[in-house]
Image (tube, rainbow, N blue to C red; front, side):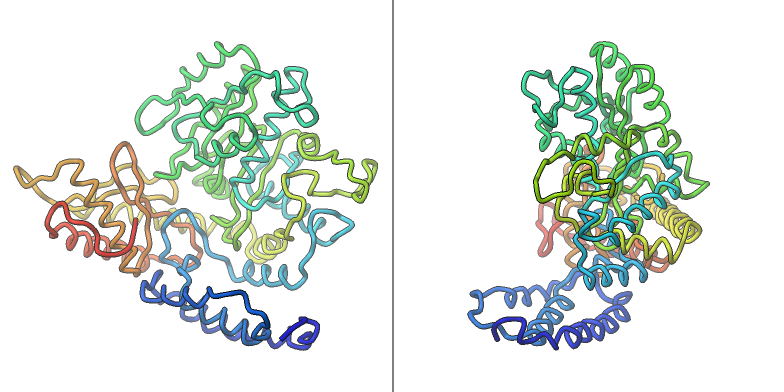
Length: 492
């Protein structure tokens, strides 16, 4: 094979191949193991030298489908509890196929009025969904990490302007370190954003009152008095180990009192605002200067998807616009160009799957899903409480359950904390090697723990019950092994 022009009539047959494979895959997905270690051998088929003459469209797609459906971790399935990963709703998945089909350059209005208009609409719908003022500016991003980066870039621009500097034009030279305050819940993506922005990843001042990381409001206020100038506060809506929340309303009070910028990292916790029974967890978010979240978590749209909202809508343009490139629209152009409002220039039309899923299920559909997941997390929390060998480490607040395996032992047979940590590391590795469920380990308050996150639209009570049963089954086996052993397969 050579020039793809010679296979122009095979575009539809290639898509038909994918559609047929998709039907079989989606029908099987609920019953598939999350990970099949034996399938890793197919990865060898990905390699080899670059072909001089290709195999052709249909052969290439057939091979990719076979490798992919055999070798993929079923992260879109109902029992993937590692990280905080949603699936893709039927509407979102189909909308993503439409996105690939149309292949719109979504940065400039002139390149795709469709993508621009769709992005404007979905940003408005998302603000409505989360109870944010319609006056906030916004932009879609690839992830919450990019959303945090975008928000903190706006905060940096605001902070530098308070020192009389246009940081977009002149940079940070001569400025002091930008003060950033947070609780111990702050996510590493915020440090990464500060690192990229030249503010320093280790400049965050942590104000925590305990080893869980809960915010010390009094300590933060003392720090703001000491700074005596503009500062940035970061509030976490949904801490990754337990799903706990910073008191956003109290932090908004501090920001108002001391003239600080308040950024809310709501990667998955922002979705609590969709449910009347959970909205108290994000009370005050409408007072933040910036808010970031993920779409490929609880919105259940395909990777990659995030969004950010900024109170001062013009701040996005000041932080990311004014390139003065002669081939781009001039400054006086009235059309909205989203590449001037965020870090990306070349952008996928990621608004389309968001539009499809919000149009399909609406506010009530998402409210029902989020409340169902909260119910499932509480169900798992109850199973943990009831099992003598499982130990809850934190209350269930939203959709994350933090616990560890602790064998019923006493006297000289009781394990030390170090031995319990090793046991749970081995348990995490063996769970994922087994593949029926998938979950990660973490370290919470100095103890190794499991922290399943329940955000996939497919997950049911049966999946939760199976998860608890598999943890107890494999935990008992691992606990019976000679102490000091190492896992035979897998990793945590």
